[in-house]
Length: 90
Image (spheres, rainbow, N blue to C red):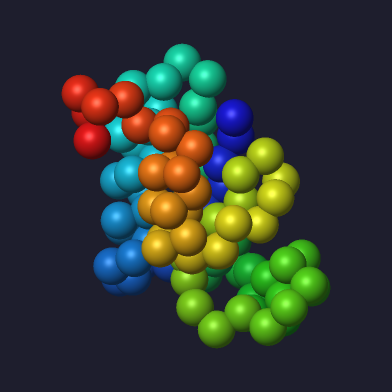
């Protein structure tokens, strides 16, 4: 499972998403993630909207196996609903 997190520095929800992804990558052999700072990479809001196919108001924007999940709240919910985090780590 590959997760890509598009975020920016100074964003508390981006930090939370990265922390959750880091815990998952430590707990699971089948999970890896990549964090992309949209400012460092020169990615604009319009670029994100084109990729996602709908308006983007906030970051992070998170994809799991190339499927757009949403922001941190949706990512956290996805992890819980799919029971991706072992009990001993959450």
